[in-house]
Length: 258
Image 1 (cartoon, helix red, strand yellow):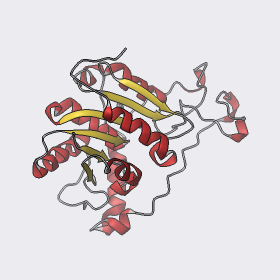
Image 2: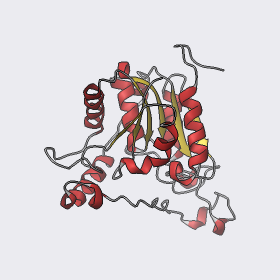
Image 3: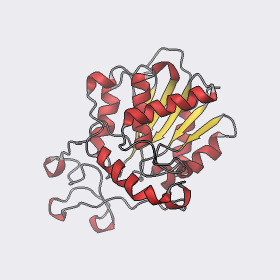
């Protein structure tokens, strides 16, 4: 059975995926990696952050562990790295469960002119004040999803806690310009991919999940109900069910199922 590599979100650490590793480790070999400069990986010997470097780090780790191929479960930046790997290191990647990824740094937001998802975030953005609906021109909604609680901070995990502030600044700088993928880039991906997002994710616009599903050949799309960008923490039961279903799907080189 193919090992599974779990890749966490930006300015985070692998502890955030504890629900997934504990679930998968019952039946599979699971690899956890703290992205360079984050979590237990010190911010040293480099000055800027780039998704291409994240992908190269994964390949170096797999080489070190003598693992020829993995399935990737990635969240946010980890999902973007998983897609990068599938594009550029296809022989090492069996499949990618990409949760909360974006493929363009300058996300195009339909905004208040969209007749259906009518919000400044470009995604479902409802709460009790809107009676659970997303269609309110005058609300000026610009909320951000509440950060998921994390007992494991950079300061407590990093070998260089004094560099945590610089790390956060560097990652946010990367977010302003990367990634910049279009249909031609994503069309190179030939392994199974699910584009996954919470239906109320206001950090990543819905059109990004749509683009991933549309531009990767035979990719699937899954919207996790009543969750946001941190669906893997907000509803781990449903998330783990979907993740396991995807990982266990038979794949003999022929897609799709429909």
